[in-house]
Image (tube, rainbow, N blue to C red):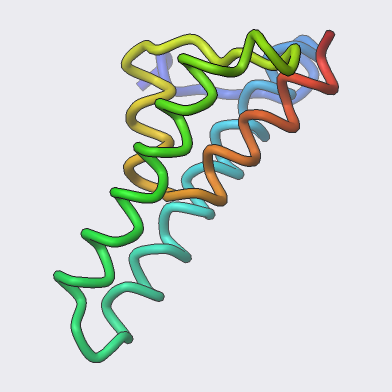
Length: 100
C-alpha cells in the first residue's frame, strides 16, 4: 500500500502539472463518451468524430510544417485525435503553439 501513498508536499511542480494534464484529457474523454452515447446514433457519431480527428491530425502532420505547426505522429497523438476528435487535435495544436 505504500507505493500508492501520494502526498502533495512530496510532488514536484512538474509532477503535479503532469497529473493535471492527464486528468484534463481523461475528463475530456469522458465528456466525449457521454456526448456520443447521448446522440441518437452513437456508432455514426463516434465514427464521424474519429474521422475528423484523424483527418485533422494527418493534415497537420503532412502540411503543418508549411504553416509552422507540425504535430508528430505517434501513439499519444493518434489516441488523443481518435478519442477526442477534432477538438482534441485542435487542443494539441494550441498546446504545441504555447510550448514553443
